[in-house]
Length: 312
Image 1 (cartoon, rainbow, N blue to C red):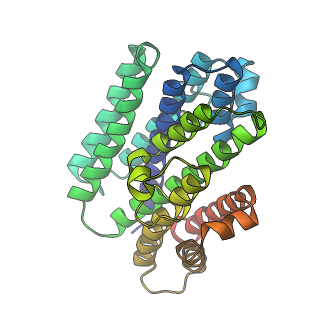
Image 2 (image 1 turned 45 degrees about the vertical axis):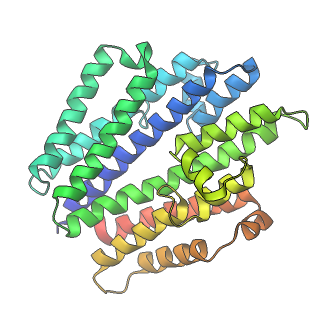
């Protein structure tokens, strides 16, 4: 496979996954904002959203003070924000167009119609009139593309590069979400924090990764921050956990490596092994923030390694 083809497939999947994750985080913040809470707590939620994507300064330079409607506009439709849903879906469609001959008709038509329908929804201002419906639409289109891809494409290098990009982006986003959301209540509030606030805060985190029911099934217990961290980091069966994402990434990376020596594959296997055999008490002994920062650094290095070895 030509490296430029592999590169387009890799980024096609990354951009769709990024758009979905952005929609998930916006949806949870929107739903949480409808609950009774102080103005400070509400503002902190939107500030955390920008922090997760490292967009705090970019937003402040363009809009100034935190405002829910402006944050939503910035994260959904702002063309100057390279991580907005608009730019992610546009880049996804352009990468798909560049490798049109590699994709099945169903995958191309799903990708293209997603972009065209998205532009229509923006023109109709659905993200302002009914944010929840809009975010559900983005998540649905991502799931539809994932299903069509796995269900129609040949199990060859093209599919492997798509899945490598998707799972790499998913691991990165889950780590960012957990890092910011875990520390937000500890930084903003004292020991007087209301347990009800804690419940809604952690429910929102779980809902943002479709893990609320999964948490109940796995732990059958009240929601505890340490258990949420364990589920999203170490659980091998949780589809958006770090361990699950790395398991799928290593599997697909091994297939495109085709048995040849690969430093990137070695590093990926090492990170996967640490997750697979890690324990949550060891993570907290290190410190959750340093642990997740280290993980994000290694994931970024993996992305660079994949680009150097396979895509350039």
